[in-house]
Each structure stands twice: as C-alpha cells, then as structure tokens.
Amino acid sequence: MSSLVERMVRAARLDAAVYEEVEADAHATGQAMLVVVLSSLAAGVGTIATGGVIALLAATVFAIIAWYVWALMTYWIGTRLLPEPQTKADVGELLRTTGFSSAPGIVRVLGIVPGLAKVVFLIAGIWMLVAMIVAVRQALDYSGTARAVAVCAIGWAIQVALLLLLFNLFTVAI
Image (cartoon, rainbow, N blue to C red; front, side, top):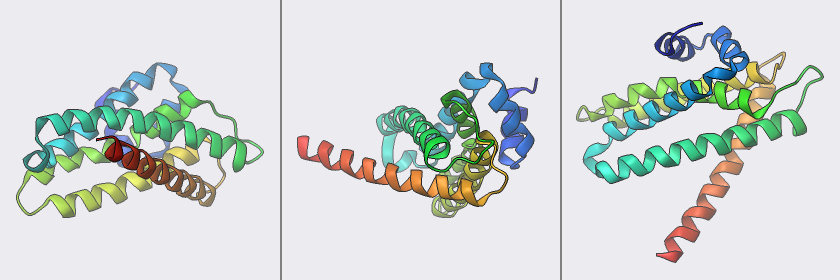
C-alpha cells in the first residue's frame, strides 16, 4: 500500500492507477479526508492575509462538508442519471477518489507570496478540476472521459445553486 504522500503526488500527477487504488482501499477514506483538509488549509494559508484564522478554520470545515456533498451528488448523477453498463460504485469509493483529487490544491499555499495568489489559485483550480474528472472516470468505471466531464459539470451546477441558496439564506438570517 502506498503512503499518503505518495498517493497525493500520484493523484496530482493525474495517475489513473492511484484513483483505482484508493477506490478499492476502504481504509483510505480517512486519508482522502486528510487530503481535503490539507488542501483547504493550503488555500487558507494562501489567503490568510485577507481572511484570518477564523476564516481559515471555517473554510476547512466547509471544505469537508462540500466534499461529502460533492461525493454524494457525483455518486447519484454517475450511477443513476449517467451510468454506463459497467458502472458500479458506492459513496465511499467516490469519497476516496474525489478526496484525492484535491491533492493539487496543496499548491495554493504559494498564494501567500505577494502577487501570486490569483495565478496560483487559477492554476490549482483547473488542475483540481482535471483531477476530479479523472477520479470520477475511474470511480464510476467509465470507458471514456466525456461522461465524467458531464457528471462533474452537472454536479458543479447543482452545487453552485445550493451554495448560492445557502449563502442567501445565511446572509438574510444575519
């Protein structure tokens, strides 16, 4: 079994085999959560000057919740709405693979360097999206990438709508 750091590096390199490995390793869910936390903390460090420590901690908790919701949506969309004949997955498999797709987000810590935050966050965001597509393709056993892109796009649209709704509800309550 690979170490956490090895898996993170391989996930960031978009190594499809590591996504298959964590999909099959039921004990890797904790590792996947740790990747999400580390990625979130890296983003927080990259923006610490504007957000502060409380924002950093809140963002980390929010990232864990968003990861879980994203995995549930991806599971439902991928297995119910857009399955292929060979698609078989459970929520745990999606939690593990999508968690590891956050590995490229570690580079967001470089946002702390003055003038680099926007570029670093843009690159990391695109990199994480590509990793997510690879993770979804592997977890749902798709024969190609197009269906994984569709699952991610639909899930992203739903998540944005939910986040906007929650944000509006939260700001009205304050």
